[in-house]
Length: 151
Image (cartoon, rainbow, N blue to C red; front, side, top):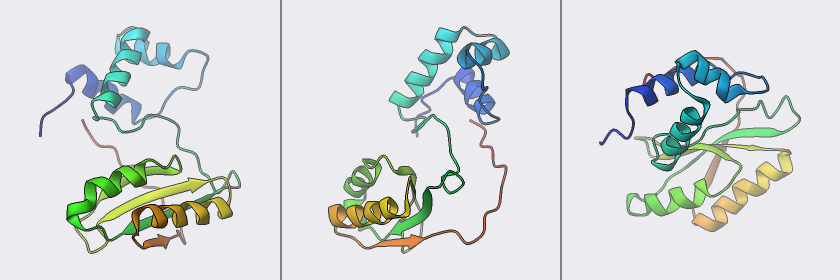
């Protein structure tokens, strides 16, 4: 696998896993902390998103505390159709992230919506567009695990 980032990008990625400043100029704040310029931070984030090193950069909201709905879902995808199904699932803005697993249910993804009705509709739409059964696995309990992945 080709590495699509340099040591400064890795430092930026690792830094941002610890949080993002809530202030008038958050990118400038990060730049100052890392000894870079604001435009350098913005360009690097844009490049990391474009080359696929990062698939998403943005806030993660606790949908249920905001009155919304959230679930973990899984699909059993034929390997020959995995890329196509990935594109379909990822085309839904309600899908927060999607990943492959070495399991009979080999595609797992998180769906967050404003209402339970929207969640139900999104899962049904994914089933309709993929032609595959979506297994809905809503959480029963929530645990915080402070996982940080070093780039």
